[in-house]
Length: 295
Image 1 (cartoon, rainbow, N blue to C red):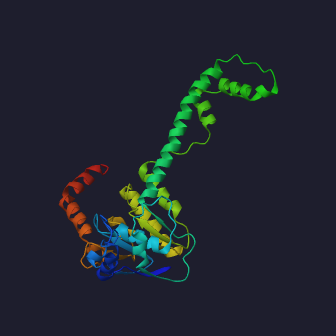
Image 2: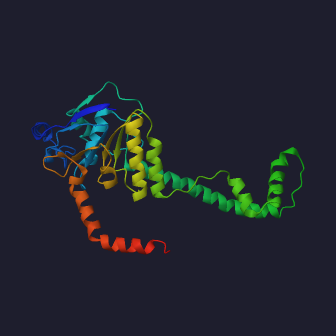
Image 3: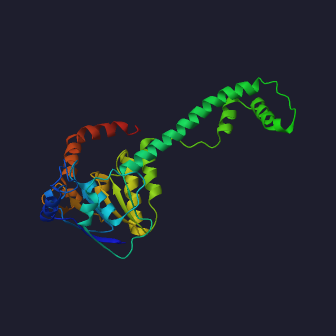
């Protein structure tokens, strides 16, 4: 499904014309002006899965945030917007097929980081409450409490529960249903999995961050299925080979000058990975043989 068909960025001449109007003041940077035009990145024609690939500083996250700004996409985390982002976005062009679906959004690494902090905060609160309950259990267990009125009923019930249960069971029941403690990678994966619904446009900024190889492949499968069966369109900034190899993805290589469309096997980052694993292939194959069960 295509909701966003094409997007254009201003070329160097239009950026220069804009800069002439603001040079009356002293600015350290006009970012994002100049970030994409230096590689003559001027247009994206989209597919159901479109990938922006490049090394650090190539501009892939910049392009994603500019598109999100131009389209007015929802985002969860606060965004440190530069002074010139909206002026830059105003010079951009977007071709869409009607109104974008209401669930369309950008999901960034900041969203994932906030989710990790949220899980840690919740689990930290559970840990503190658990410590308190250990003390309360011992106090209730030793209590000589007597019921004097109905107002004391809750406390009596608590004493009875403490006396009829082990410490661990008492604490577990009092805490209630605890949130499972996710690792960073699990939290990151869940953030993307829960954030993707049917029939919408999603911009994903380096979703492989914090993901293991296994989790990255799970995310790749989720994206493929969502695009193929559930009417989703994705624009992804990444340099992960697991995501670059997504079936049917159109890949823009932001390391090229000018930026060009390439197959994932043509990308320098993928070939560097391939060369690394090829150099160590004998070691890996040797150890894989040792791991096989002996008959």
